[in-house]
Image 1 (cartoon, rainbow, N blue to C red):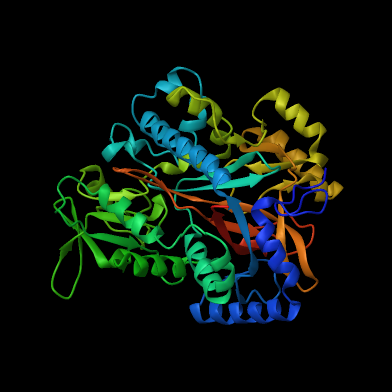
Image 2 (cartoon, rainbow, N blue to C red):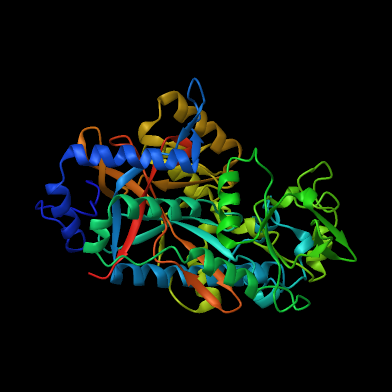
Length: 471
């Protein structure tokens, strides 16, 4: 089946939302686009966003590939997508409050208990502790794919420490510098207010013991972390301190930051450190990245962690398969955004089907991420398929399988000119005491090679700006 192209209709004409851009591209000389691409590369080099392509012989740091051609959503398309995102994240927060609380969904048999209790990201220490306003996932990144002009599918939920928002913001800034004429011709919804929305969200969930002007910090593992640029970028945009574990200490179940003027109480921590490393007294004793006593202060209600401890249960791909039922259980609604059809290999009938059709399916580890540890059947060798079949027979509970989707394509500027490349999308959803916010845009990831479905930047994919326009 041919992939749905988001700009071009089967008859060769541009979809209405892309018509102005298509006319501009038709009239833009390739020399102009090449020149602007070089300027964009220079800007990103100054900014300092780099990445490594794993498997490269030299494994050197490179600029993240950036595509000049924006991806466009019409306002009505975005409205439907936004409604689905808000619905999904509300259900995720209700699910987490339940599995660490009354466990109604487990007792009802809607989600198998063992999927939760045996999940490596489930934290028994969180049982019985309610989060302020019932919010566990303050910042969510929901990965979306599109296969036609109507339907969006959720590929996976990212509820721990979703990354990529710095690229969304930097992509927009570079595009506005390089293509002011395009912005003049389109009514593009702004994304620059994301830092303000994020700060408002974080401040809204400050503990009740905080002052009227709560102190927010960004907690990073340090400069050797692959996402350190984003951590420092966000702290700068938020106007708050970027701290490492050694910059904080706990006294009387309250968190303080060391400053030149003495200790300052910290109320909200936007943490970019995994649960295991947050507190050596509560989790991994060998962690040098966390803050001794931090988890105790968190449970005492004297500091808010965004996201809360234990949210990784929702990142599990087996839990993902139950999201339509989870939404129906808590909200009494059908899911607005569909799941990708999925076989749970833990179920005998599903396992039998998957083993018989391995050459056609994508098989993923339930706790995998970044595109690693998976089998893409249509592109796998017979030896790889045999090896994966053995893994499935040995530990079926660790895997799910999905059809190979024909991801939508968007126009992309390459050395050969404008051509179609496959894309996915990660919008960011903010949940605070004052409601749920979705900035009109997000991170579009694009496969830079013709025919490739690999959009992860860690495996050679690139990014492009995402526009939501009012006609």
